[in-house]
Length: 439
Image 1 (cartoon, helix red, strand yellow):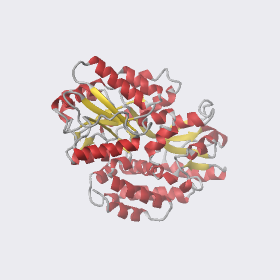
Image 2 (cartoon, rainbow, N blue to C red):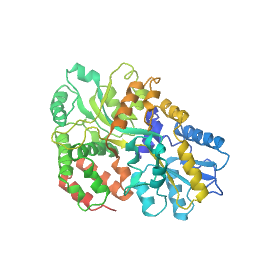
Image 3 (cartoon, rainbow, N blue to C red):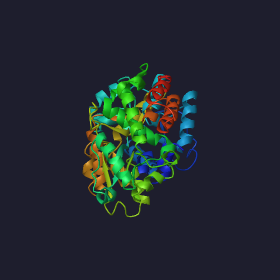
Image 4 (cartoon, rainbow, N blue to C red):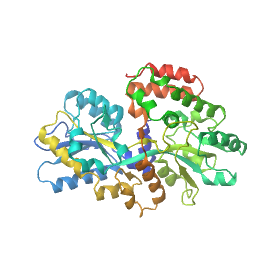
């Protein structure tokens, strides 16, 4: 099961906030295509909690504008992807395309299916300047902006069990060296250092995303994304691959991690039940643990921090990875009037009502100053942490499997699984991945 399905089905508040999206099967209505006149069609994902928030934004826009209106069609996650792919191929895509940015957006750009919004953002600086700068990363292809960032941010976070650390008189690690020092101590105490749902593969990927960045900065993966030949042979890449295998050899992950699925939330349970001391996971984990972990959070036992630094690494410690937001593009074959309606709609997004809606689902809107709205939330401490991590990140890397093409992403996940099972060496991993660069 894909991560997005997992997030939605997990039903944790934070989990659902951004991806939100899977609900009833099939479209909610039959309206498709580019529409007519100034009416802009808008397809997005169905299901709570995201659907009513998105629908509310449309309703407020339509009510406030007597001219061009927005007409919505909603789909379940997988149905949406299939329907959109077919519609783009047939030249009948919606005026506004909801998506995840990165590799998917790049494929639209390469096929001239979406408009370049760079000049529009330059002419409407206030629209751009109120959002987290990092949210524009997955919206930018070849230095041009092709999508409007929207909704919420979900960075990857290092969670830890405070009770385990206090009981064993240990301190959460701030450096990779401290991580490796903690591993034998926690194993000796009968606690797995790290929980990991390794069968899901993308959970393993998060470790490499951070190690690459901390060791060599965002340039390491950017070279891969840019299609540079043999980019995976970067020394920082090989060091990151080596370090993760060193952690595996030291029994850093829970025994049998390769057969644990993230879909079942078993990895989360290992943390809040004290079977594992730490877990690297998306910020949506907070909602899952809140829903399934009994009083673990209320009792103050959940700790969280950014990924440790790596000694000698050149990556900025403020850098993070995950989902920097969701993204709206304008279909290139929409009429000029429909495009104008879409751009006016973009200006209306993330108003106070929409921001409050996302916060109530446990999400952090990608709006500068949204932290002022978090104070009333019972989860304000965690939400403020996420806000600070996201708003202060000098670089917010997109999840690799979303940044790369579907072909390269599947090869990546297969090789990550082999790397974590010690079936291939770091150099073999790099060699295998170099073969799909640019594909």
